[in-house]
Image (tube, rainbow, N blue to C red; front, side, top):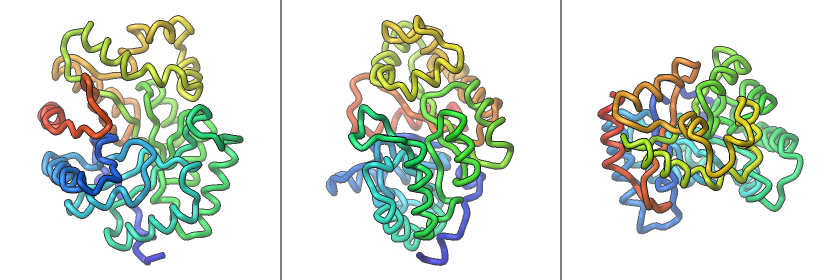
Length: 294
């Protein structure tokens, strides 16, 4: 491993706001230029971090890092079932030796429905971190997709911090209590730039439909006080309004800020749009969102 891999990444470099997007992750060489251009604009707009959605690997960060000078790039997340620890460590070393101190390895256990190997996920994650330790990937360059208390605790002791997905400000406050003051807490938040309540909630229900089938999320929402009725029929208004920021600029700004007030250091913002594909780069929406936040 290169000497640069011992560098930590300061919270001010990660920034208060980042962008979460599956479209920023691609194996297609024909999309590299478009991704690089989008990354350069994200940095210019003031976002601190770009989070690569889907089960991304360190190599997927290269087009973004090459097009920018300050932007931090993280995986959100790399599934521990898809890439073994040795492969992950090798890719981390390559990326970090080329762009020192600008990459975060976001790891998670995915879901039983999506990973055939899924078994004893917490123990598997601990073993994976042990292997990364042996390979020289420092804890301060890893973040964990943590929802429950045990994995949140692990995020504070074996990683830089936690990157929870599809959570609420109440979960953020509980996570901060578990983590303590120092570890990074960077929840994801879906943003819908739509002021009409019926249209915004309909789009949110379309987006959340898959996650309503995944126990990792539904169990977390139940722990937060949501009921089976809230999880039925695409999600109650109460659930949708808790999980997504939508509305006019003031309402969206207030919702984003509520996560920071609850204890987040950073909010990873995922723009949700009608009929969007996995390859979309919603650059106009990122510009609009930047005008609201910065």
